[in-house]
Image (tube, rainbow, N blue to C red; front, side, top):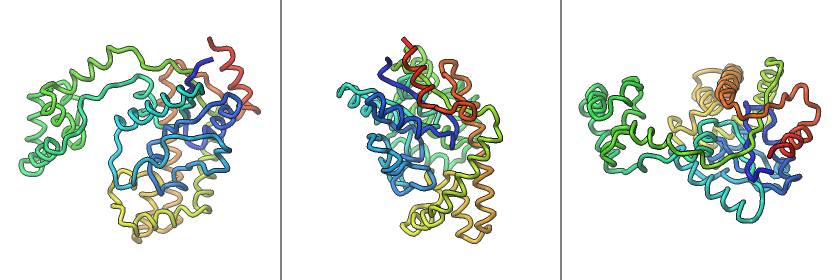
Length: 307
């Protein structure tokens, strides 16, 4: 049996429940792969499992950052690698579970990152953007790294700044680092499980129901508490689905009912994007929630039959 299992799929498909059920049968621990469950104080809106849902199964990579922090895929990979190594050192199986495809893919590939951010270089590049404008900075990037520049729109401020920062720190274009990284074999060889629905409308109904449940559990109060603590509404964390819309409602820009409808629509769109991402992975064994009465049993059969 593989010592690493990945459970992927769209929001509200039941990934956490399956991960816990398998962990109890396989003496495993769960490594969360959710770009929002990493934040402390963001529990309801991220569907972070509580103690009852974890059912005694250790979970890693939740509550590791404050909502005001910027959190990168590189930082996630570093922390997740350490968690997996710790789990394996104790002779246990690690189950990576979540819907953030970018994080999961980079973790499994063992992607190396061109350079950690350095405040001095970052501030220098941001100063150029402020003083001389994005066109000037984009032209600099075109000279330094035309391959990366051609893939970016001039409005993509964050990635243009990062690409120039990498060039200044390493003396090499970001495109070179990316090409070198792709030459490496994957770091892990997990067994992949994916959750999906034959009837897309049943998934969307679950998404809508989950949003309503979040409201009943106090999502609006959670958003209010974060804002009252001084969390900037423009941070990455507060741009998450559910938080952005309710923050607008709390500012009086729309009604709570309108915010809920927007959250449901955004969540359905997100589920669709997640499925598009994961379908590219030919290694995933798909389990269809709406036609599989016992998901853990079906998943165990796949695990036991894999070399």
